[in-house]
Image (cartoon, rainbow, N blue to C red; front, side, top):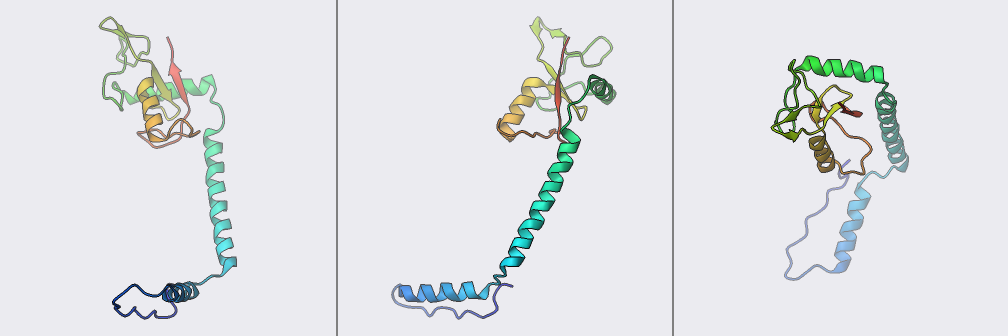
Length: 160
C-alpha cells in the first residue's frame, strides 16, 4: 500500500516552512504505510530460507574436493572443446604437437604462462584468471564463477 490517505500539497510560501509542518507531514506519511511487523518478519524469514537453500545447493555442487579421476574426466572434456586461446587475454594457450593445450611448452625462448583447468572444463592462463578474480570479486570472496559459463568452480594448475 502506498498511501491510504491523500496528502495535500504544501502551499507555496514566501519563506521556509515552520519545523512543525515538517513533523506533521512526516507523521502523516508514516501513518499511511502498512506496518504489520509480523508480515515483515515472515518476509525476512522466507528470504533467509531461500538464501540458505541456494547456498546449500552451491555447497553440495562445489563444496567437495575433486579426485584425480574427476580431473582426468574434466581435462578430456576440455580437450574436446578444442579451445586454443585464453578467453580472457585472447592469446594462444600453449599447444602440444597434436594441437591440444600443453602447459609445458615454451614459445620463442620464453617460458609459457601456467595454464589452469577449471572444474567446468574451461582453460585459461593462470595469471589471467587470477587477475580477473581479483578484479571482479576481490581476494576476500570464497567463491568465484567462470567468466564463460558463470558456474562456480574449483581450479587445477596443469603441470608438466
